Each structure stands twice: as structure tokens, then as C-alpha cells.
Length: 476
Ligand code: 4AD
Ligand code: MG
Image (cartoon, rainbow, N blue to C red; front, side, top):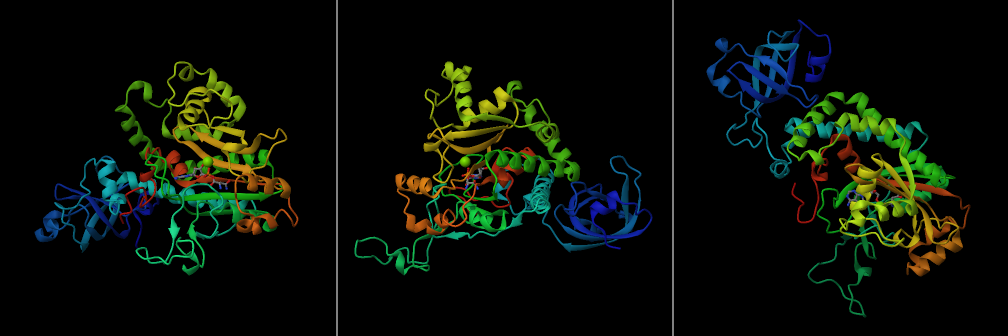
């Protein structure tokens, strides 16, 4: 029977002939192979009868080699594992030049592993991260499906750049060196593939709104592109965003949904990915030991995840948050880079982190932001100066979610677009929603990689996506 390592280690298959394929992690004393096939963080120990094995074959059992092993699963004689395989035959499927192989059985820096991203999932850390990423993705679809949402695929190439969520990447088949020029001396996009200027999408929200206004509850989960030149540990040029959109739901409902959703997907991995989490928890603990005491986290990785699952998020209005920040020590002692003086200031990540990590010490939902620091489509409050926006801030991450109740009143929306110079022709279809059966509706966007960062304890967003795209970097 062919088994995975995971099956061999968890199921009762003792004293049976087993058959397994995987990669050699280490080969010790000409006898003990630690074999991994990606199905679990754990390796299975395969014990080679070296006295009866051809020496040339033994030499080919090197770190990184792909092998096919047949043998018998027995109770382990040694420490550290309950079962092991007594090898009866071993076939080398793919040799590995052990000296040149980049993934040596030792500690590598994450920078080095990013340069070898095609091989880094052969390490325990990255295989654990990517199994968790996969599980979280499944949990997202599971949550929405079980709660009556339809999954919707929104376009990746978009003809409207009106949303203003960020700088965009142009999509064009025009000759970059000699583009056609129109009468006014500008590039003539009428001659381009789509007959107009097009870009990669920064969000599927506006299209998701159209489907929410017919299917009721929808969500998107797709690639999203932002051409900002922000070289931070929390920004990617290409990331995956989850965007639910719900008809007849107001901002309070939106906050309830986001909180319930986050708790549910995190609870899923607590239940199903325990071994990977325990491994990453240990990794994080080792990393924390290298930091000064004051910067170390008070909670372990699993405790942090449990804390989010078990406790209510703190809901605070922007106005309350500004008061807290204005009175705060770092503001009074001028420790913030951007000091908070006036109501209306945009919050920087230093402020968000203060609120979450120092003041409230739990996830925080900030709501009712000033209209002029938020997008045009957010619903204006009765006060005429704030909008029904919400951001969810997480310890160690900052902004995890951004969402809002949408402006459903045609006249108010049109006025807002006019004030911001957004042409009505470009969003005629969006305005149609407000003409034909308009209704209160809301939604939010969650950056999937930021969720994976939180769940894995990884500190750099480049280490939670297989092949990160960032300024000056699109290798692989
Ligand atoms: O706050 P944002 O820009 O909101 C929107 O795009 C709305 N259309 C969402 C909606 O209401 N449907 O982005 C949403 C989330 C952020 O909170 C953050 O988690 C993530 O997307 N995000 C990024 N993640 C990685 N790299 C980037 N460059 C990101 N920009 C935003
Ligand atoms: Mg945002």
C-alpha cells in the first residue's frame, strides 16, 4: 500500500508492508533517513540495513534526493518517534547534489530562502506556513458557503480606475517604444487592445456590489494589484483579497460579520493544523529570544490566536480614538513621527499599533472615519462629516480589514463623485444600482496574506505568499 508520511504517523498501520515516496531531509550514520513528503511537518524515520545495501546506492541517499522506499512499519527502537520504517528496498528517483543543494540541514536566513523561494517549502518553516495558508483558504470558502454566500470571480483587468484604492498597473499591448499618439499629443488608448486604458484591479468591490444587489450575499477571493512603491513588511504589489458584500446589511452587521468570520477561520486552523502551529510557535519563541525583553510578546502564537477567537473585538469610533491618541504618552512626549493634533488626521501605522498593542491590547474595530480621508463610495453619516467606514486593526499586523456601509442614495453619491472629479460616465453601471432597487448594503476587504501572517507568526509578508511581488522583485 502507498501511504503518505502523515498517514503512517497517525494511523494504526503497524506490521504491514508499506510503500512511500518523498525527499530525504537528512541521512545519518549511513542508516537513518529522515524522510518528508510534504503531508506533515514531521519526518518519518527510515532505517536502512546498510550492511546489506550496495555502497554506491548508500552514497546516493543525500539531502534533497527523491526516493521510493519499501519496507515494514514497526514500533521505533529509538527516541523521538513512535514508529519507523525498516527499509527492505530503496530506489533513488532523483539524485541531489548534496554539496550544491541550497537547503542544507541547518538554519538559513529568510532573506536567503526568499532568493531560493522555489526550494524553501522543503524547509519545515515554509512547508508549515504554506499548509496553513492552504487551510485558511479552505476555511474562508467553507465559512462563506456555510453562511449562504456565493463566490464570485470579479475581473482582474479593469477599465475603471475610479475606486482610488491605490496606484495601478497598466495593461496594454501597445508598443511601449512607439505608442500611437492622438490629436492632443497623448497616447491613443483607442488603439489599445480593449480600445481604452485598462489596468490590473485594485479591488473587486464595485463589481461585487452589483452581485450583492441581486444574489444577496456574495464574496470574492482573488488576486489584487497595487503599484504603490511601499517597501514594507506588510505590503505586496500582488496580494489576495477576500471581499464579502451583503445586501440589506448596515455597518453594525458588517462589523459583526467581519469579527465572526475572522474568529471562525482562525478557530478552524487551531483545530486542524495543530502540529504546524506548534512548530511555528516554537520558531517564534526562538526568534523572540533574540529581541530585547521589552519587545517580546507576552503571549505565544497559539495563545494569541486563541485570544482573538475567544474575546470580543473592541469597537471604538475614530473620534474616541483621536482623543485617546491625543492624550497618549508618545503623543505628549513627541515620540510619534506624526503627532496627532487635530480631529481629521489620517491615522498612521504607529497610531494604529499604539491603540491595538499598548492601549487596548486586543483587536480593535475603528469606525466612523472623517469623510475626506476615505473612499467616495462610503455612506455619509447624518453629521455630514463622517462616513460609515470601519478598519479592523490586529496586534503585530496593523490594518487587517477595511470596509464600509456603501452610499445607497443616488443624489448623495453623485454629489460626492462630482466633488472628487470622478466622471459619471465611467461608473454608469455603479450608479444604476442606486436607480433600480437601491438598498442599504455593506462589505469589507481582508488582505489574505495579513491573515496568514497573523496565524503563522511570520513577521514579513514576503514569507507567507509563494512568490512575492514587490518593488524591484518579480523573480520566479
Ligand atoms: O483597505 P483597502 O484598500 O480596502 C479596499 O480595497 C476595499 N475595496 C475593501 C472593501 O470594502 N471591499 O484594502 C483591504 C485590505 C486591507 O485592510 C489590507 O488587509 C489589505 O487589503 N491590503 C494589502 N495587503 C497586502 N499588500 C497590500 N499592498 C495591501 N493593500 C491592502
Ligand atoms: Mg484600508
